[in-house]
Every structure is written in C-alpha cells, then in structure tokens.
Image (cartoon, rainbow, N blue to C red):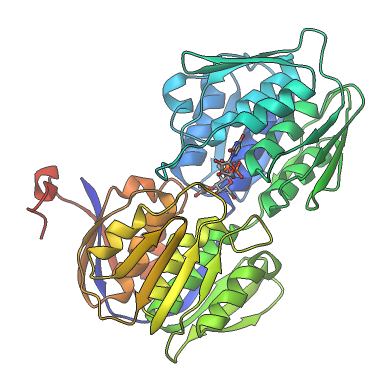
Amino acid sequence: MDIIEIEGGRELNGTVEISGMKNAALPIIFACILIKDRCVIENLPSAIDVANSLEILSKMGAHVRMINRNTVEIDCTNLEGGSSPYELVSKLRASSYLYGAELGRFKRAYAGLPGGCDFGGTRPIDQHIKGFEALGAKVSTENGYLEAEAPNGLRGTQVFFDFITVGATINIILASVFAKGVTVIDNAAREPHVVDLANFLNTCGANITGAGTDTIKIKGVTSLHGCNYAIIPDMIEAGTYMSAVAATGGRVCISNTIPKHLESISAKLEEIGCEIEEFDDSLIVSRTGPLRKANIKTLPYPGFPTDMHPQTAVVLCMAEGVSFITEGVFETRFRYVDELRKLGAKIEVHGKTAVIEGGHPLTAATMKAVDLRAGAAMVIAGLAVPGQSVITDIHLIERGFEDIVGKLQKLGAVIRRSYRPDEDFIQGKAN
Ligand code: EPZ
C-alpha cells in the first residue's frame, strides 16, 4: 500500500507554487465536448481526477494529447455522445458534467451517475435534473445511469435553484450554451471556478454574462470555436498550505495565487493568529505566536469554503480553548473526526457542528485519508505533531493535490511517499 510518512513537529518555511484549480479544470475539460475544434488548456493540475476526466474524453473518441505535465490539447470533433466508460465515470463527481455537455451538443445525454468524495451523506443531482427539464429535456435515471433527451432542442428559460449548487450551476451553463434564446440562472453559485468556466466558454465564442454573481445569463449561440486557455490557481490548495503554516508555525510565500479568492480563508486564519501579507499574485502567511480558538460556518463562495473544513479543524485542535465548525454546505462532512481522535484530539460532533476542545498535546499516529480534503488535513496533522505519523489511502489525496509531498519537502517538511505491505495496516497491527 502506498503511504505518506511524516516526521512532524517542524516549522514550514520557504515558497510554494500553487497549481491550477482542480475544480475549474474538470468542468473546462468536459466543456470541450461542446467544441468541435482544437483547445489547448494550460496550468492543469497534475492530479488523478484530471487524468481520469481526460481519459473519459479519450475513450469517447476525443483527441487528447498531453503537451507537457500541465498542458493538454483536446479536440472533441469526433467524440461520440453516450459512450463514456462507466467505471471511470463512477469515480468522479465531475463526470456529472457529461450530462450538460452532451445535452448541449447532442440534445441527448446518457452517462452513469457520478461518484466522488464520500462524506457520509447523499450527494443528489435533483437540481441538475430540474434545470435540464426547465430547458425542455426529458430526464430519467435508472440502473445507475442518467438519460436526458430534447428531440426538439433546448430552449432558453429561467432556472431558479432551491439552494446554491456549484455542480448544477455549471451543468446548466453547459446545457444552455446552444439553447434557442436566453437562459437565466437565479440563485447561481458564485465560485471562482464557475467564473473560470464562463470565461473559457466566452473565449470560445459563447455569450455568458453575470458569472460570479447569483444571476447568470446565457444567450444561445450556434457554434463554438477552439481556444488556448489557462486555468486559475487553486484556492483550496492555497488555503491548505496556509492552514499547514498555521498549524506548524513558520513563514511561507504562497505564490501563483489570487488573494481575492482567499479572502474568507485569510480573514479566519488572521483571527486564529496568523499574519498575512498580500501581493498581486501571491501572499505571505506566517505564524509565530499562539493559535486562538474560533467559530466557523462553511458556506458557498464567498463564504468560508467547505473544502477547507477538515484542514481548519486540525489548526483549531492546536488552539487553546473551545472552537466550533458548522458544516453549512453538505449534509455531513465529519468522517475526518475519527482520524484526528487517533492523535488524541478532543472533538465531539453535535448535528452539523464539530466542537473542538483545542490545546491538548497530540501524539503522532497512523491515520487514513477518508476523502480528498480530509486526507490533506491528516497531512497537516502529521506535520504539526512531533513524531512519526503515517497516512494511508493516499490516492484520495492525489486525486486533487499535485505533488503534495514534493511541495512540502521544499518547505522543510520531513515527509516522503513510500510503500508498506497491506497487512501492516490490518486493524491493530499498524504501529
Ligand atoms: C463541488 O461539488 C465540488 N466538486 C466540491 O469539492 C465542493 O465541496 C462543492 O462543489 C461545494 O463547493 C467539484 O467541483 C468536482 P454542490 P458539487 O452541487 O458540485 C447538495 C473537493 O474536495 N445538492 O455545490 O457536488 C449537495 O449534496 C470537492 O474538491 C443537492 O442536494 O457541490 C451539497 O449538500 C468535495 N442536489 C450541496 O447541495 C443537487 O442537485 C452543495 O453541492 C446538487 C447539490
């Protein structure tokens, strides 16, 4: 089994280069289905979810060629709709974007239901379906597949989401790009990656306005052309390294980032005891004094991101006093708590709130990455706690973080990727 081993208790110092944003790269890759031309996408993070998304397009008949580790050439001219491979689709939440892209191009969609991180709750797609039906499609889900058809084509409409949803906002943008007339999405998600998708599509000739606000307008066009496009930096990766510095102490320059995207994270980390200096495309985060307790509620952008929930919980375990984190986006997202308890963390979960009694000394342990962001949180815990920690199931971390071990080594962490036989980790045997 591949593992990460960490000798914790050291400060982090130096500079970390932030990669392209996974959650912007994925919708943009699937958006290429709408474009019967050559696109070159730059600043792609080298991560498993990106590789799997490109593999899906390739298996559907698209031309996909890696120009280098972070740049891909995609041409979907010969892509065949409805032909996505189930075993790959079922691994990714982002594969739900196949529905919107296929519906937009072929007026028909047929693909497996999406997978993605398991937070212990459900991750329905009812709002996606509501939007497709509003556009005039007939939608059914059975035997693990979604099928959508609009034989008379899609027509512009108004879609009012019952609550803010990134995935459904993205999917309705994809489906409505060629619809007849104007589509207005109300209660739209405002995340930077929604804006990045709209910018990509507009560069290819789409007519999308209002992305980044809660009302997005899509005027149908007849076709799109290819383009060269660079993905925005990953705000969650940046926030994760900022949280690592908060937990270990030290001073790190987070370079190739957009401080504006990090406002809620920076504000909360300053409240907790970090100093943050912002520049045009970088920021310096340092923590020299004690950490302070805090209360957090995760919310859609520009609120505090849910994808920063587990990482921040680790920081609050190191802060004197009782802190609270309320999960305001997903039904639940507390599977990381059991892993932190292995270090001696005192955390109780009441409903959607984790109550963290911080400041108790923690001890190094063997932890499991239970999902992508929780896995990164376990890395932060291993870095902050003195002694030898081990993290298993690291493929979940590598789904969305490019070279997390190499980047941390450059910051002075004693961390390495290694291998141990599975039986070493049979319950009770792991040291
Ligand atoms: C995207 O998931 C991200 N995934 C998630 O990041 C992120 O946590 C989430 O947005 C919120 O920002 C990708 O971009 C691939 P939602 P998504 O639709 O689109 C419920 C990571 O670690 N909902 O905004 O699935 C849903 O269950 C991942 O990179 C419905 O009930 O999120 C959730 O409770 C984890 N019905 C809430 O809405 C629907 O039809 C928000 O979901 C759609 C969503």
